[in-house]
Image 1 (tube, rainbow, N blue to C red):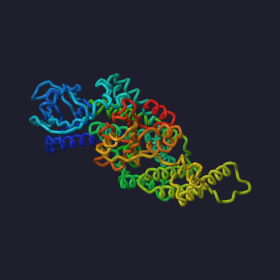
Image 2 (image 1 turned 135 degrees about the horizontal axis):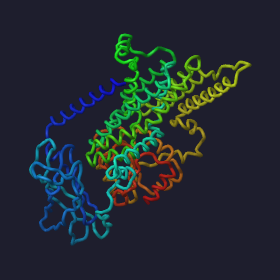
Image 3 (image 1 turned 90 degrees about the horizontal axis):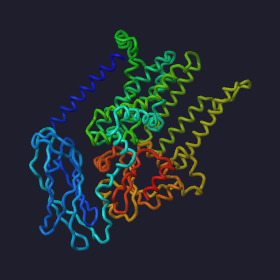
Image 4 (image 1 turned 180 degrees about the vertical axis):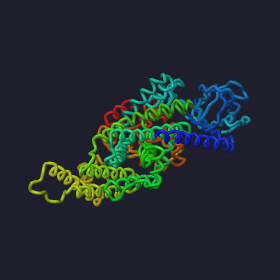
Length: 593
């Protein structure tokens, strides 16, 4: 263990140096690419100007100028937000904008009806790597609606979108609270996240690893293995979280594809089969001897392998976004303080891993040390690992294949529990108990198989389609309209005469499927949602359009729900990030309305 951490730190520092070298070596962007303006009419007399700023570039606050192409058209003063102070080599101490800047431009009107307005936007910016551009002028057009029929935009002092939601509040807490207060709260938040479906699959992974130790699974060894697993998870969470906060993209989303998930599932299958006694997993004897000579604590490279498994699990098994994670990433992105944000993420991951350490200690002390019981426990964890592998690969295979896989897993496990074997006359209580469990598993497997063959694709209700049409209404999917790009979203918002709910979804997001299964299916929720225009952004593919949609709302990944009023403006403080049950989500909808 003592040799492992310095080696990992060296690898991390080497990666950081290489990453920094690649950034400084990149070619500079054309200013039209580095600084992209867009216009939007907020009401009949106000234009919103939005600049998207490429990573590593910034715009000067005091260099913005806007002129109307028609000299007779009068414009009001720009309403610019405060920028970030910077000691600039060219202009000295000044204010600049990174990533994005949004400001307003009042337009003086003397006539009614729509107004076609053409604006010349002037700005000036630089790259952090050391090049500054001359002032750039870009011409864009926008149509203002009739002021007499369009409600006025909310005052500029209204809290920005997302500032009142849970993730925004967490970002503000990081900005204003003391270091130790923030870290304590993030540790508690991590404990809460350890109970979510995005973390729960890590329990059978770690338990299976410890069970695989067999008679060597002592309490101290269980603690050491679980600590190595949690440290791997926490360090990776911090590193990937920092990268996501600085880049605005949840990097683990890129790993949610068939090849990566299939490979990771195959690892679990290999581990599980070894627990059934088909083979023994161990390093070559020569390598084991070398490691044993250097450190008696690293027999077989177990700790290094468990550390690596924890690192992989954190980015592959649990990539869903919850409010504490979103808040930390939002803080990193807004402030650029990657060190503080990274420490908060590390502590949160330790909180998530605390129950795993408890599982490791309990596993090391409670597992039988010899006899048939130990073999049965190993086989049980082997089944759990197979279930984890199937759960992990389910998003990238067909629903029919997934239900067929669950049917096989339940049925074959039932056979090993002697579900169809006759009990001896003098059978003991435990034999009867496990036979009963086997019969239940066999019936569950049969129900899954029948449901799959009958066309049902819900493994939690495999026979729902056989009950007739009595419950057809509650099983009907909500009428979501897909949106695939920012432009398509803006068009939908402009044409809606009702409040709008935009749901960010991905096939690999467990919390998203929880929302669909348990929250959106609730009759009370469905009744309130009938008054909304429902839009869905499926970001499973994680392509450029998906990333642009997420970046538009400063989201790092699903699940996330955004609400808009009838004018297409986001309703401040009502975002939903992470899972909400039906009761809490109904309260949120009532607040929105």
